[in-house]
Amino acid sequence: MIAKHILEEVLCRAISTGADFAEIYAENTRNDSVFLTDGKIERVGDNLLSGAGIRAFLGTETVYATTSDLSREGLLKCAGAVAAAVGDLKKTGSVILREKLLPNLHPARIIPSSVDACERADLLRAGCAAAREYDPSISQVSGTLLGVDHTILIANTEGLLVGDRHIRTRMAIQAVASKNGENQSGSCSPGAGCGLEFFDTVAPTDIGREAARIAVVNLNADYCPAGVMTVAIENSFGGVIFHEACGHSLEAASVAIGASQMAGKLGQQIANPKVTAVDDGTIPGAWGSVNIDDEGTPTTRNVLIENGVLKNYMIDRLGSRRMGMQMTGCGRRQNYLFEPTSRMTNTFIENGPDKNEDIIASMESGLYCRNMGGGSVNPLTGAFNFAVTEGYLVRNGKICEAVRGASLVGTGSEILMNIDMVGQNLECGQGMCGAASGSIPTNVGQPLIRVSTITVGGR
Image 1 (tube, rainbow, N blue to C red):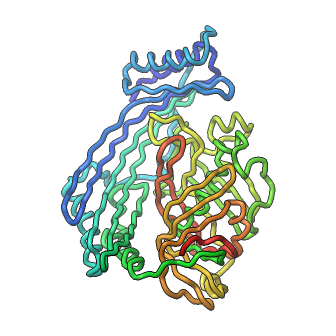
Image 2 (cartoon, rainbow, N blue to C red):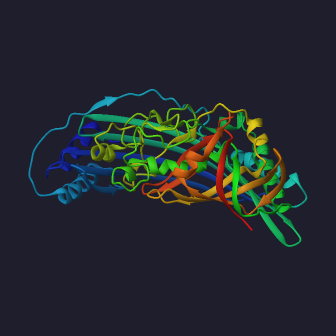
Image 3 (tube, rainbow, N blue to C red):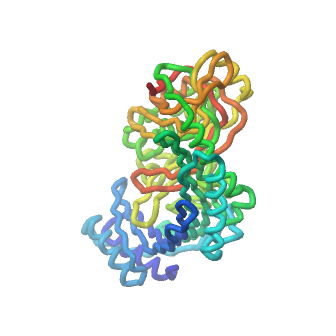
């Protein structure tokens, strides 16, 4: 992407006024997408993003600049702007880069961009048709098929020169069910870090039917009552609760500056002993996996909480300097226009000791959350609010009628302690996480869990 001798020259320019470290992040990313509404192609997208970001450190202060000009002159101009912002100390030095080759843990067999748009549209049509045919109440169906081909190059003044290419595929289908002037929606959006071979294991028709099923369930559901309840949260995207309510509070971006409820708690019991939580960017082919993070550090399996005890944080380069702790391969960004920061990859609660059937049987009354939606959280206080997109009341140990309009409200520290049963059907769901460094793909996951008490919003 950029010649080695140019990278070395640019890095020297970036540290020429006193910076103690500098890096270049260059990328070339192609996004191919097909959008379908009610069986008709709405649009076909083919977007190419190319550019570089140059960052310099002076202690724990950083300067970051970007350019879409990857010529020698364009990169030197960008590095000069960074150097000028660092200071006016004149120094000379040299940078010798040594290329590092890493194994690709996430190979792709069928690159989305290599397949004709008509063939990709046929995959999406099959999923949308299955949703439309699921039930007569389905009134509208739309879908998207996304393919991402992401190539990066990272070089820094420590001599690192490393590159990576990562392919991602995702299908998202939304269905609307209507009756007597009322509409309810459902969605399903699985994805993976691979090519179109993804659909060898996940059928588009299954994606469409699942979206329609959720819409129909909600159309025929009553509103959820409000109150403090025992709640069971199902696996897969149910893990968004941990991701939002606790995961963000374990990122160095907030921990290092004391803006996290988890700051200063290493070695302390912060969760029920049944809870072990992990962030693992090394899982082959997973939606949130990468070979290296956006600072060039190999990703790791990072045990955050073990048997309820806080063991580690997610630490990027800046967080490492601030905290005096080792980087964990979690410096991530949406693209070169964003400065990287500590972010999650595939974050989940491990399988626990409880049988799933025992979790539901243990509930005299409460709420079973089969599917979760998005929400919001304050990392400093851990206060969160999440929507339940598919829920059922539980009475006398049995799942009963569907309810809609439920939300879960609480704080991360409370919910960790109140998880008193952890099942054995760990599964992950796919999402996009937005934060200071943009929107990035992340997996969330858990087995079925029981929260002894939590506030449920409803009617």
